[in-house]
Amino acid sequence: MSAALLDGKALSARMRERLGQEAAALPRQPGLAVILVGDNPASAVYVRNKEKDCAQCGVRCLNHHLPAETTQQELLALVEDMNRREDVDGILVQLPLPTQIDADKVIRAIAPEKDVDGFHPQNVGALCIGQPGFVSCTPAGIIELLKRSGIEIAGKECVIIGRSNIVGKPMALLMLRENATVTITHSKTKDLKDVCKRADILIVAIGKPQMITEEYVKEGAVVIDVGIHRREEGLCGDVDFERVSEHCSYITPVPGGVGPMTIAMLMRNCV
Ligand code: NDP
Image 1 (cartoon, helix red, strand yellow):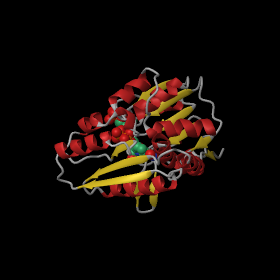
Image 2 (cartoon, rainbow, N blue to C red; image 1 turned 135 degrees about the vertical axis):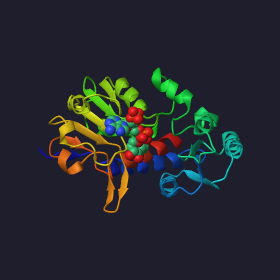
Image 3 (cartoon, rainbow, N blue to C red; image 1 turned 90 degrees about the vertical axis):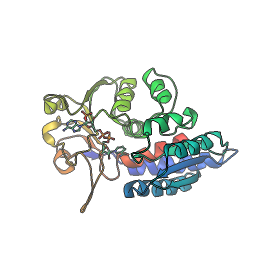
Image 4 (tube, rainbow, N blue to C red; image 1 turned 90 degrees about the horizontal axis):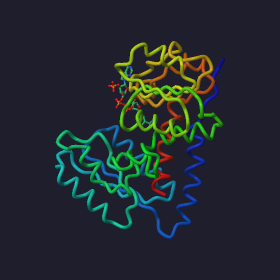
């Protein structure tokens, strides 16, 4: 069997075009404050890309690039300022932050109604008890991709590898909301291969290049690869695409799968 591709790039482009039309019809242009501290090259690339995405979706991007030695107090003061500004609808603080800054404190300082990343404890709590709020963009984008590709979630066995606050945990809550039967696995899980082989939908967010081979995948499963790794030959994911795609029914490519959907959801949250 050779899997069908879940084309996040194409779906994201369609969503962003529609968001651009929606934004143009609003009484005021939506504004996103993007705060970058220090010179992490990967973060700088993400921020540049966000600028382009904002332009495409009719969102005004207010970039704040602070030096690496910025203090926690200085960053908190900037966040407070963005909280107060009426032309700023969303605030995004690019992670990771330099070690002198406590990222949790900064996330908690963002007004929950401007927390377009969905990382604030109030938004995470709302997701947990099924109330409205911003949802972390990567898991939300995966749900959108599954649904718009006509993949049924209700009643399916879903195994998630990874329990991070930004991917694994919110992913599990969203799949539960969609009535999947959910298993979360992590580095201490015993017999990981056997657990993964139960999955109708396998969602992989481990941060280990191409770790997941066909030995972890049930024949005909849907495989979602969240991982992103830069190598000399180009980007790759946490899944060994060549080997796994011979055995599953649907698979997300890297690049062009989950990544573009994350951006589309961020833009949707802003608009
Ligand atoms: P984290 O490093 O925060 O979490 C990784 C998780 O994987 C942890 O829960 C860890 O377990 C688990 N893990 C690590 N090794 C193993 C193993 N050998 N077996 C089983 N579980 C294991 O990563 P993130 O969730 O932030 O990101 C995961 C990947 O997704 C990264 O490659 C990242 O770059 C990418 N990413 C992509 C995004 C996109 O838009 N496409 C957005 C966000 C992330 P434990 O908790 O026990 O340590």
